[in-house]
Length: 349
Image (cartoon, rainbow, N blue to C red; front, side):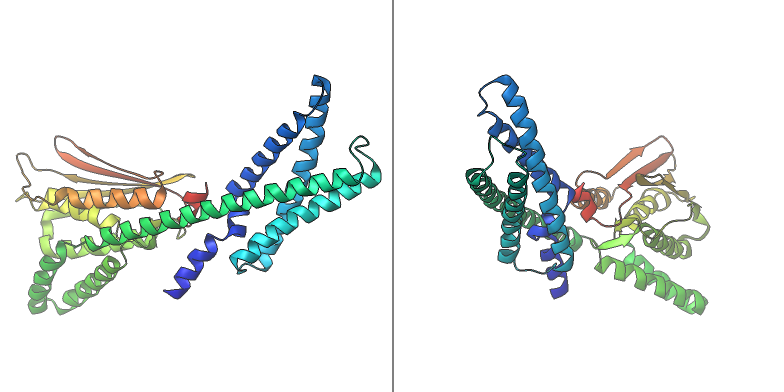
C-alpha cells in the first residue's frame, strides 16, 4: 500500500508533469504568448514582426534547453521533494536565460537591446514567468490528485457491488461433482478460486489475455452445470500480454449471456466470443442466442453492464465503449478498449 501511494505521488510530481507531452506543449504555448506580448512594444509593423521573430526564437530556445535539462534531472533524481523540484525549475529557467543573454550580448546579435539592462530584464521576466508557471502546474497537480482520489473511491464503490451470481450455483455443482467425478470437482474448485481471486481484484489492472483465460474458466464451470444445453464458440487470435483491461470485465459479460440465453431456455443456447485487434483498439464481442418467447425476470440484469461501463469511463476517460443490442433471436454486447500498456496513457494523451 505504501509503495502504491509513493508511485502515485511520484507520477504527479512537478518534474514528471512538466516532462510529459502536455507540460512541454503548455510551456511552448506560454513562451509564444510571452513573445507576442513583448512584440507589442514595437513602434511599427515591420519592427513588430522583426521583434516577434527574435523574441520567439530566443524564448523557445530557452524553453527547449531548460526542459532538456529538467528532463535529465527528472531521470537522475526522480524523488526530489516538491520544494526542491520547484526550485530546480525556476533556477534552470533563470540560469539558462542568463547564459543565453550573456552569449547574445557577447556576440551583439541584438545590438539595440544588448547590454546589462537587456540581461537583467530578460532574467527578471524569466523569473516571473517561471514562478507563475510553477504555481500553475502545482495547482494542476493538486487537481489531478483530487480527481485520481475521487476516481479511486468510485472504483472501490463499484468493486464492492461486484457479487458474482454464479457463486452459489457453482458450489452446488461442486457438491454434485464430488459424488460423481472427483477430478472434475477439483478442476472446478480451482477455477472457482481463480474467479474469486479476480473478484477481489476487481478494478485493478489486468490484461486482455488474462481476462480471456478467466472467462474460459468461468464458462468451463457453467459447462459442467448446464452440460449439452450450453454451446460455446471462441474466435480469438493470439493475444499480446500488454493490452491492459480492468480485472473482471469479460466474465460478467459472459455471465450475462448465460443469464439471458441458457437459463431462460429449456433447450439451452449458444454463446460466441470474438476478439478483434487493431493498432488502436481491442474489440470483444459476446453474443448469445435467445429462445423464442423466453423472458428474463431478474431485476439485476443491467447492473453488471452498467458497472463495467462506469469503470471503463473512469479508467479510460471516455476512450472505451460498451454497447449492447438485442435482436430477434440473439443478444450481443460489444466492448472496445484502446490498446494501452497502462491506464496512465489514457490521461497523458
